[in-house]
Length: 198
Image (cartoon, rainbow, N blue to C red; front, side):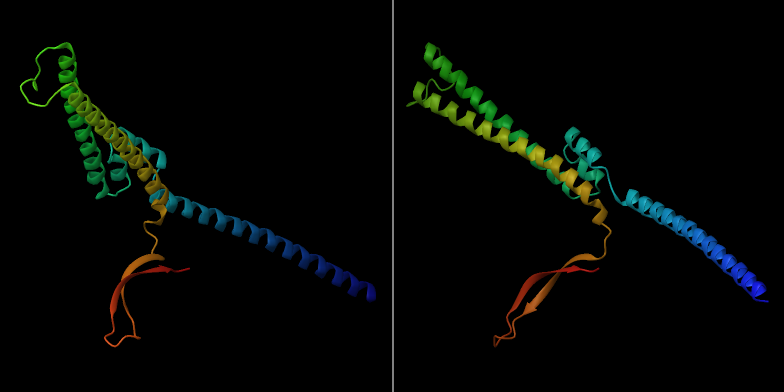
């Protein structure tokens, strides 16, 4: 009788262990399926929200403002294009003035007539100072326009990197009116409230 009870007990123990092992295997496979499905969901969400920083940079390098259009920052695009176009306009303006004074300076040195020949008080020294001033202004305009162009590319790349946060409702900046209860007239002040929800 004891042999039969031991045999039944060992049979039940083995069957329970096997069933638990098979349940663990099925649970692991179910969890792996869930992880795979969840990973695919995150990847598709990430792909729909993110933009390529490389593409944004290349677009901005080809035409300033195009990277901002790619990032859906439609207000920034004409501003960027306008700043760089203004810089190019200043470069052209100062270069024309420099060339005018430079030609007059060379003509003054060689004793030939130039467009400032009849103006009283214009000599080689004045023309040299004028051409140096216009060349310096042109060089400053070139440096500032180049800086604006590079910042346009960096801005497009950064916006593309941060595009995942465009749809995040947990991050918010809202204007608020702060009241100071310590004063008699309740002075109101404008401020910004930053909220981070987890």
